[in-house]
Structures are given as structure tokens and as C-alpha cells.
Length: 278
Picture 1 (cartoon, rainbow, N blue to C red):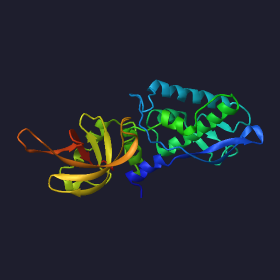
Picture 2: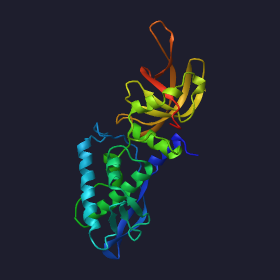
Picture 3: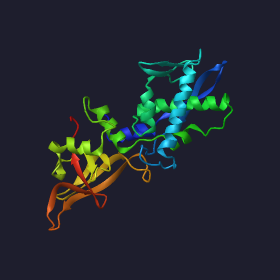
Picture 4: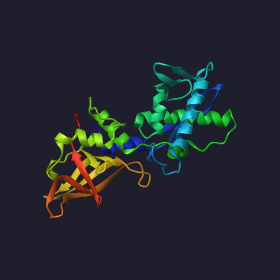
């Protein structure tokens, strides 16, 4: 059964074949496996941990699109493009062929909105591009894992949205939904007791600056709980990950409990809701 923790591991366990020369100048064959984990945070607002701005990351995305557009026009390149579906990478080139990778998915992967499966295909396309740049264009290009950590990643909405859609068929929330959307859609299922918090509940931080998901409630009392969270945090804290956090009720100036509002990570405030079937 899919859990938030296993979904984090999906990002961490990505790999790509290594492209090597084979038979003809146009042909390749994938041998071995390169570990290419996605462990960084990125979106279109901020620099990532490598210091690359969104525009710098999107410049690589545009270069890749131009490259594959050109290669798809060449006979026997192993790359094809169908306007209705997307790019395909032939099994004659690799042990892990790609079928119908949409152009729009390039943007998703470079903006923090890619699923593990989408990023896995994108990384393999990058590996193909890197091989070509080195062996055909005589350019110096850093290893694929460095490209992945410098340019790819997933943001908090991307992680939670893709997880919910992967596990709950028909869930209307997705990787591009804002934090406020999770808060508003969960209004009727807001948690008001610690004992009601369940795995896959979504946590929305006050000010709608972050969203996370509950992996497990480890322990709880009348006015506290310890939960394991899964999330993709900001560049200062890494990408897809899990952690243990203690949560408490918010208190008003008179010391009374503000039901439905939790203290998270010290001073952060958050709401917790069940949005599985929203």
C-alpha cells in the first residue's frame, strides 16, 4: 500500500541508464544504472539550494526542448515526437524506453511539479542529451546526478498533490493547487481533536506558506501529539523527506484553546484536514 513515506522513497530511488556508443554513430545502448535521486526543493519563485534561479533552470529546460525537437526530425535517431502525445525514446537506444513524454512535462519537472515517474523519464532524457553533448558536440558536461541536484526538484504542493492523486482515484487536488486550496477544501473535515488525526491528513501552515502530509500519529494526549510528517521543504531544509514533530493547541491571550489550530515547529500555526476524497 502506498504511504507518504514510500512516496518520498520513490523520489529518492530514481535511476537512469548510462548511454554508451553502440554499432553506429546514431545508435546507443543503455548499460548499467546511475543513481539519480531527487532530494532537492524547487519552484518558480526562489533560487534552489545550488543557487540557480528559476530563469536559469528554465533555460536548461528550453535547451532540452530545442535539442529533442531537432533530434526527432533526424532519421534513425531513436527519438520521435507525436504532437498528440509527446517524445518517445526507442528501445533500440536504451534498456528503459520512454513512451509519449509530453512537452508540458518538461515544465513540470523544472518547476517543482513533477511526479517520481515523470522525473524518472526526464532524467533519462537528460542522460541522453548529456551523452550527445559530450560525444557529438565535444562539450564538457557534469555527471547526470549533478544536473539533477542543480536543476530538478519538487515543491511542497507538487509532492502532496501527486501523492493524493496517486493513492486516491478521483481526488481533485493536484500538484498545482495552492496551499489555501487544501485549507479551503478541508473545511468540513478539519481535525479538532488529537485522537482524530489520521495518516494521509494534510497539514496547511498558517499564511498558506507550506503544506505537508501525515505519515503516522506516533503518540497523543489531551493537548499534544507526536506525528511523523512527509513533505518537500524549502531549499534550506532539503526536498522530499520525513520528520517527527510535536504539535500542540494554539492558545489565545487568555490561555484558552483555539480548537482546530495547532502549533507546529515552535511558532508555526497550522490546520489539519482529511482531504482524501475531496
